[in-house]
Amino acid sequence: MNTKPIGLFDSGVGGTSIWKEIRALLPFENTLYLADSKNAPYGTQSQEKIIELSIKNTQYLVNKGCKIIVIACNTATTNAIDILRAQFNVPIIGIEPAIKPAALKTQTKAIGILATKGTLSSALFHKTTNLYASDISIVERVGEGLVSLIEEGKMNSLEMTELLKLYTKPMVDSNIDYLVLGCTHYPYLIPQLLKLLPKKVSIIDSGLAVARHTKATLESNNLINNENTIGKNLFYINTNNTQTMSSLLGKNRKVEYLDF
Ligand code: DGL
Image (cartoon, rainbow, N blue to C red; front, side, top):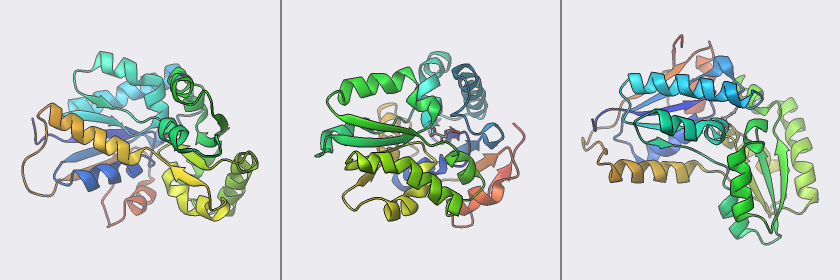
């Protein structure tokens, strides 16, 4: 069982930002990444549909023998993780916007959050916010259009810059000192955001925390791969977007088309 892969899925290429953190922390693990780009974005779809797609992706990874599933998508986590955990008999790790660390660190008592509609409207997001940030001003913004542009590889387009300016302006006007990235696609926008935001604003995402949680869960379940050889990594995508994904992964990593 220990040599079986870690399975990851996202609505598309964004979860590769999580894969990179996991790979850096657990280089000897084998991994299998599923990019459901055909159905991206998830963030504008109904909860019912997000659950249906999340079950389908998890089932595929479980059928492939994955020993643990990482939902590399905030939208799928906040809408479907309880159902996936009830339905599948493997450890399931999710990712949620890092509201708690931002709320603990803020000096201005104002934080910004950029995420999908599906995440910001989820019960889990509201629960976390009420628990950790009830005394903080939270400036929420749906990152409408961002995921689609990233899927098309248009991270540095003029269109992207204009959208980011529009979405962050109310946050800057509210004197935020932390911006929480609540979508796994958005870490690819950090270079752009750093140019737009005042110096005092720090950007937080949950990638490293998820990698650490994955490692701790493998350890506590005795599932760490103890073979001292660099892991094998498979990447599958169900559109012809292999090139965008491959360039995000870097190092000429091979991405294969898979009809799923
Ligand atoms: N990467 C997904 C997330 O973290 C993007 C969601 C979408 O497809 O809209 O939420």
